[in-house]
Image (cartoon, rainbow, N blue to C red):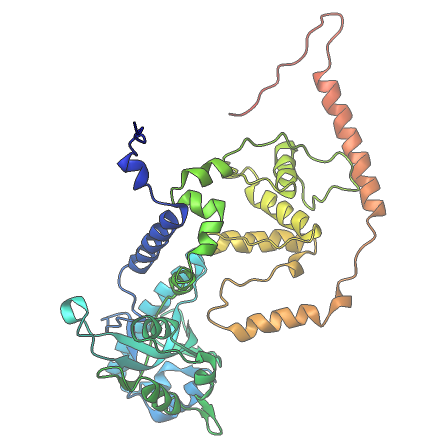
Length: 422
């Protein structure tokens, strides 16, 4: 008599593997990123009543100055009074939006665009035709007076191919090219000239149906901070699945169990020779720094005004001393500026590589790195002996005061009540 095997649960058999869960989640995250913030005007550009400053038919002398990288006044490019008033109105609107993005999000978004590429997409829902800027150059708009009736335009010398255009051509048509090498063709013996870029890109995209580049010149706000994020999610799924943290976020229970553990009781090091606090910190803040140095993953939640930025500065400095790299992210640019300021107060601002605006001007970012590498003797290391002795004396005095405040009172055998904010 043959014994039958126990029936296998259909639900268990259909249970997705860790790799499958992660692949599904990564695909969902990628779609969510693409849809975040609405249509991307780096791919679906449209002229806005206030968000576009058209300079294609501006005065040739002013345009020549602008493209050469020299500051130029808006009235030197738009000379008819009524047209200048309209151009100034648009410049004000663009400046306001770009300033808000810079101050609130740390995003440089004001660009001079050269060329708009379009092509047919028969398979796309609704038959929508892409309209993608080709070349981008960062530009600053500065009013010349309080009335803001005229503006100075200062264009960066750095030029780059629209990364969203590059990514869409790769994803939909399998077209790849060296974007930096192509952008370099915009500079020749006579200065900036986008036409060689247009011609080369048209040859590269010869098999794309209806690919055309319209030689326009305009100023507007364009953000592409999500493009690198989407690109990061286009690779193989194996590295994502190998991370317990990513797999846990994707919903894998085994990975969630691996990352879920109790926070150990980490205390600050009592030996000042091993302590790495560079700014004042109370006991709770010092414990956060000690936990981070111990490799603990943690979330610190604290109300405004309780020293969060100071604790981040202490943590970043301590981890840097331990030979680790620290990435600090913030929704607001002002918070990052505050962090750099606090580190600068103790002479550690040179440890910071401010990459918040790197997408606008990589040349300046590279120059900052080279300046630190080429000047190692500019920042001599101080002798910490006297500093440690002073800190030890202060800590001993504070510890004695704390002990006196909370010691038993004789002959009553009582002590003051300790109040702790909740």
